Length: 187
Image (cartoon, rainbow, N blue to C red; front, top):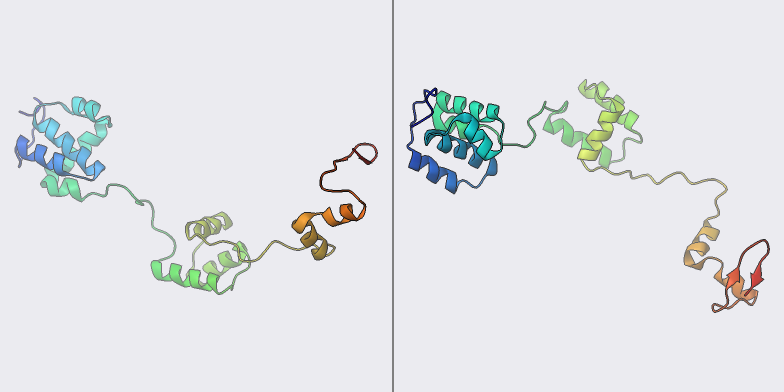
């Protein structure tokens, strides 16, 4: 049944593996079960990998899991998501930091970085703080700086319609076209 060089003590028969493969809804688990079913039914590891469009090493790893603990071992491994290094902050520290950010305690990423170093011993770089804020979907709450010479009234008038009233006072109607060049002229 299995390939000539494979010494696997199958705990399930081919039909059971096929039924489990067909019923599985998680695509990554389904691929693992499909590979087991193919190997159990006589395909080689390389044929199974080729049919499933996965690396040979993946099929080999799934079979080693099967040898170690059967289907339970194969299905218990994570199938995606965040599996990288854990974050510098535990969930409670993360929640506390976000509440302090919400309260407006910090003004810059550098302030947050210093706070994390001082209170939690976390060695974040400034880019790491920005990444942390982006993942937490924290947006800037302080508007951009306002120039001292900016005229708020003139900006508000411009947003309402620009120079429309001034042109009307000059006798330029909305149907007239004002052409700009080296000099201003009504067309």
